[in-house]
Length: 159
Image 1 (cartoon, one colour):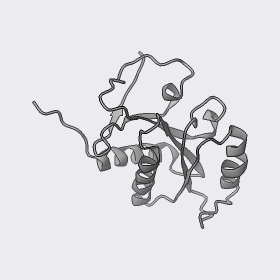
Image 2 (cartoon, helix red, strand yellow; image 1 turned 180 degrees about the vertical axis):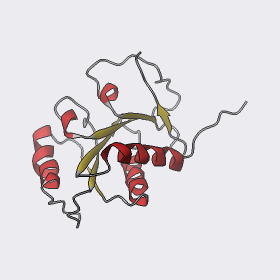
Image 3 (cartoon, helix red, strand yellow; image 1 turned 90 degrees about the vertical axis):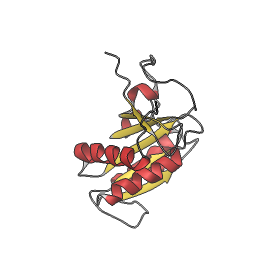
């Protein structure tokens, strides 16, 4: 029996709607983190397009190997002040950042919302126990992106 898998647009639209329901006003920050090779940049670009498709202003950035202090100083604080560099001073814009270690303890508090991408083909990540401090355990949404055309939202409730 064939298993139904959602289309990428359905998953992205659902994530965009959830984000906008909770953070539809004000200057907001959204992180896309995950395992190496999970497609963080492409996923963040597609999520930005989904938010834009709903009429939301989005600014995109990709970072890697930046410390928490550098991230705050060069990207987050200028965005919060309206100095986006992206050609908009919209008070309702969202900055979507993709990169590694965005969900680490030193940067976790910067984000209003975060997505963790799993992406190892064939890996069973659903229902696994996560250390209390792991980035995956603290993500707002977890997505299995091992099939880039059919990402799948994963609910890793521990109750």
